[in-house]
Each structure stands twice: as structure tokens, then as C-alpha cells.
Image (cartoon, rainbow, N blue to C red; front, side, top):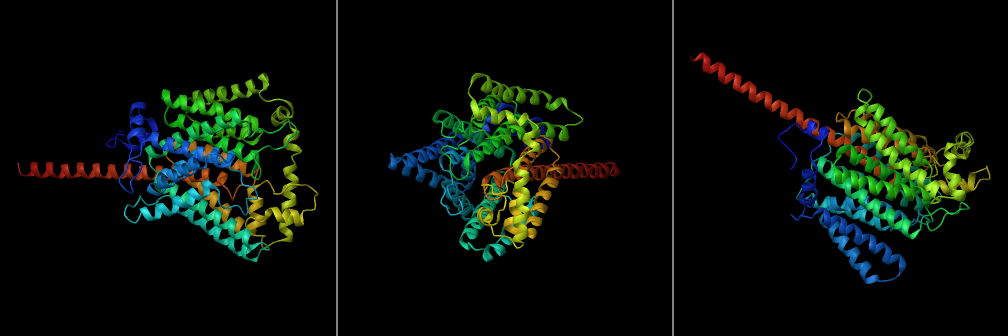
Length: 500
């Protein structure tokens, strides 16, 4: 098991053997509330059951099986909010593919959203008799994000569609609750590694289902199939996040089994990503790995060189194979290859959308209210384009929350960035920087403030920051205790010598 008597920071930096982490995965007490113990296998089984319930519900067949699966997961989440948070991460790809949010402004009853709300309530109730360790290092950004959500109520109340704004605010508050609970229950080295492993397995199996069924393939003529509402780009960005999480597993544990899990899942997710035609993750993933490695190990490049080469060969190999084999072809192939063309960046239509966003804000300086960006584009856009959003999170916040909301949001994100650079454990710092770079890159390419694409990576970043803070405090306290013991022994020796 994890060597608690050794220096905690040194142990995490060096990593332990697979035998130790495997023992943790299968024996760690995941559920505390009622004193139950659920194994790693139980969580994966629950994930598969909930995935099966999605499929059954969508097909309209075997509804009894779907109800049973749903009730099983309901019970698991009520007993263990920690398991619920892990389930939500593991089911992101499944949920995005099988439960697209058509007219997402009014559709509140997403299965994963219900699970999230249930996790929050169960966590609060369970903490009445079993309190998790309180948050220490990331209170400020959480407070700022909560202030941001509350500030949004002001333009929301004054909006033409108040109901839509209130629905959007309630969704945001649930997502912030998800971040809060996630930090409380996953901010331990073993726990977060378990959660990352399960999330990667869930994303890999979900991607495999998508490839086999073909439900998320972008059509040759640029039509979007199967996924209404949020669309295939949401799926593509989610896949990119979990590829980075898989890389993070290799940063933490470079054992044979972890390499196998990360490699297999990354290969499947990369193939699925290419079939969606989503381009931003194809740029953001290598960018985040290279910049993160340079920022963290700039004086020890050799420590990440092998990892960088391995990941590059893995992802690059799938990329080349997909183009050569015809796995990706036609207009979809041309779309992906356009990332290597300069005009993709110089003539990007997003630039015109950002200018249009400023024009819309100038007509609505108090904001149109959360969730109402789509109607602002319908009503006030003068460009004649069919775009329904600014394709930039910061411009979306400006339009919906006004300049004050944008200011709070920017300060909160800057605070998160500052917190990252206070991390002392290099593996934690590397994966946190990678996720942050990926998050910022996609924030500049799409409007994600109101969905899990923003808050899942934010939660992971804050968890790594919190773990670093706790381990550093424990190490300092241990050093103080050791110093006190040495000091006490010195006093006893001095007193003994004085009596000689």
C-alpha cells in the first residue's frame, strides 16, 4: 500500500509499483457513508449498467432492464457521492454520444445532470455524519465562480426569456456543485489516480461503441449526423480531454498495465476523434503536451522526452493510418488536413463572429442573460451568417453576463492559472498545465461556459492543486514533528550529560 511513513511528495513524484496501485484499485474503500466497500470492478460494472440503460432507453426496447440499471446506479450514487463523481467522468463520452441536448436551454433532465444533482445532495447528507476533509487551497477560485453565477441572475431576470436564463443558471450551479464535491472527494493521490483510470476506461469503451455503431461520424458533405443540439464538436472536445487524462496516467504511473490501458484507450479515442472531424483537439493535444513539458521540465527535458515521443508516435500513427487507409476520406479528410493550411487561421470565420459578438454586446450592454446568446444572434446579428454563438467562451460570457460578469470570470480563470504555478509536485503540475492549455485553447474556439466541457477540466485542475497543497502541508508538518523529536532528544541528552 502507499507508504505513508515516507515523504509524501517524494513518493508521488517517483511513483510506486503497479502491485501497490493495483492493490489500491481493488481494495480501496471507495464508499464511506454506510461503511460499505465497493471495488474497482463494481464501479466499472455500474458504468456499463448505466451505459446499457442509455442504449435501452433510446432504442425503446427492454425498458425494464433500463429501469433496473438506472435504479442500481441511483442506489450506488446515493450511497457514495464519490462513486457518482467517478461515474459522471466515466460516462461523459457515452452521454455525449447517446444523449445529445436538443434545445439544451430547456432540456434539463439529462441523465448525467440528474446524477450530478443527486451526487451533490447525497454528499451534503452523507457529510452530516461523515465529513470529508475541507478544501484548503482552492477556495478563492470557487468563490469567484459562484459569484460569477450569481451575477448572471441580474441580466437573467431582466432578459426577455427569464425562464431560459433561470434554467441556464441552475445548470451552472449544478456544475459548480459538481466541481465542489469532486474536489472534496477526489483530492487524494490514490483516489484521483483511480478516478482517472476509470474515466479513461469509460471513454475508451464509449469510443469503441461509437466507432462500431457509427453514430457520431461527420458526413462527407459536412452534415452532422445523429448528434443534434451540442453536435459532434462537443464529442470531439470531450475525447481530446480524456486523451490528455490518459497521458496523465502515464505521467503518474508508467507501469505495464497503465501503459496498456492508456495506449489502447488513446488509440480508440483518437480514431473516434478523427471520425468526428473536430479539428481543435488535434492542435490542442500536442500543443498542451509540448508547452507543459517545457514549462515544468525546462531544465530536465529528458524526463518527458520519452513520453513525448511515445505519445507523438501513438497519436501520429493513428492520424497517418486513418488518412492512408481510407478510414477518413472525402470532405472529412480535407477538413482535417486543413489544419495544416495557413488560410485556416488567417481566414477563420470565427474572427468575424467575434466582431459580431462585440456588435451584439454594444446593443445589449447589460447582457442578454445566461443561455440567451443564441437568441441574441438571431435578433441582433447583422452579418447574415447562420452561426448561433460567438464560438468563444469569453465573448459568450460578455454577451450573456455583461462586462462585470466577464471581469469576474477572467479573474477566476487567472486565479486558477496562478494556482497551477504554485504546484510543487512536478507530475501534478505537468498534467494541470496540459489540461489548462487544452481548456483555454478550446475556450477560444467554442462557447463552453454552460456545459461540462468547461467544468470537468476545471475540476481536475483544482483537484491537482488541492492535492499538492495537502501533501505539502503534510510533508511540512512531518518535518516539524521530526524537528521537535530531535530537539526533544537533544534536550534529554544535554540534561543527562549535565547530571554526569
